[in-house]
Image (tube, helix red, strand yellow):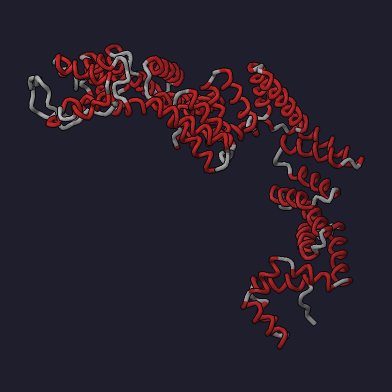
Length: 547
């Protein structure tokens, strides 16, 4: 384990040196090798993200930034990495959100402040130009001819002349606002949505009205669609209906018809993949989702749809029990769009992978080899080395109680009492009748001069084996220590939280007063098991005595 730490540090240092020297591909290679050894090291992902960004591989830079925040969500630098990657990808609003989250953690971080300011500046340049001069785009006349809200206006030569004048002198706009067509034109040029109130538009000449019925929301959405695309949507709806009825073959046929009519819509392909998933044809589901992503990328589909396809691929690999690949695709999904559901899927999968690796590492034969090595070094007095071998033995066979007992003995020799007690408790949990586990625990408490707790441990050992000499000797030694310096024992007892709790209990204080006034009252109270345990605790601590 120490060798791995050293290798990771070495690879990281090499990566840092290459990054500073501008050898970016080599830097990525070194960081990647370090990540293979230590896959949860957030610093390594952060450094590799920086290298990818300098290489221009911004999507990879974003993926690594997400990994940083997965393992270290309270690290401001992770948000700086994420913000930079998103900014390079042109996702300025999301980049700003990342920078703002980072500043919540570290309000004085100049790098985050600069990144946020730069994003705001770019957004102002992109959107602000239209606000200050709606006619700044040299192609605005063509845009007005194509937009259904203004194309009729552009048939009027006088209106076209007005547009040309305003393009050279936008300050004159204020003198033209009495023409309602100008307001509509401004909304088009500034990227505003079309008004749903037809009375706001007074075109000249007015277009002939073919239908006075107000169009539905669905009809508005379909205004720009071709007949083939509209038919494709109907085929998709038919596929959805068949899917809900679990008529999967019909659903596939309907989705294929939709894809044939409109091959640019990735949702048809993605829906088809969902059918394969329900049919448990996971390989076909995966290849179909990959096709959906390809179609989506080519046609600039919403990143949420891309993310959904990646999540479905992850689900398919998980169903195939290929957890490593499932993890990769869940991470890809989150790099496109973070949703609580996918994040939870990834979290559960990572726990599953961790447990899978732990179970795969178990090997009782190798555990026995490591235990023998640990025993050998223990006999030599080389306790740290013995601990190393016992630890490896535990990883290879975590249910062997004796291994914890052996390691506890090493910790005791090194005066690492808290670690020793932890191992004793685990040993006893695994094998409640293992006498040596209680004896070791008693020895540690005895070393800490916690004689009451030591006596409890020795007593439990004697309950299992009344002839255990180590437990008898330990119990006697504790009794002698209590009698040799009762005042010191009382001081230690008063510092014991359990004793303090007993003495603070009003009912126990009343019982102690009764015992002091009339010792015979003790007999009545001992019939109550809980009170008897507390009195026994006080007797062992030396705080009370019975004559």
